[in-house]
Length: 236
Image (tube, rainbow, N blue to C red; front, side):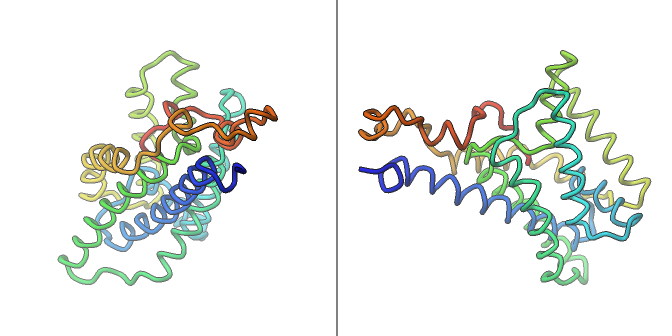
């Protein structure tokens, strides 16, 4: 039985579907928050502010910022996975697509609906993406790298980073509002719930293919996802 057609092949296929479905839905959910006009998640406050200043679309700005943050991984000795690189390439394009298709929310009820649906979908997307176990997003890799370098707590590092990006984005014209606060309060519980819902069993739970044992072939998971699931933080 080949790896591609056996349990490990199906396992890998499921993880890939989860990864890219999660990234696309993450971009669409971010577009919904933009269209609500009630406030954005912290990093997108920065992205919107930079978009206002540069004239570039938010999706393009998101991609550029993600790539720049990824470069900071080099001195921090962080190792990107497939999910890390895909995060940079997919979410921005999906966000621009969502912004092109979604109309502006007219009237407070419609705007509230977009906000609530956007935050909920963001939680779904985060659960899908993280549970696929292909490595953390560039912004979370920056956070864990700084934690390891400085010895400061993850909570402190994350708070400092997000306060900085929100403040900078706000000064540049990004949207801060009730949606920003609601997102901050709800995304953790939502992501944790959907992370458990979409959890993919680790390779140890799968039967080892005979061909891999006989030929000494490395496990597919070890090649595609060198980072451990413990390295995944709840946000791309």
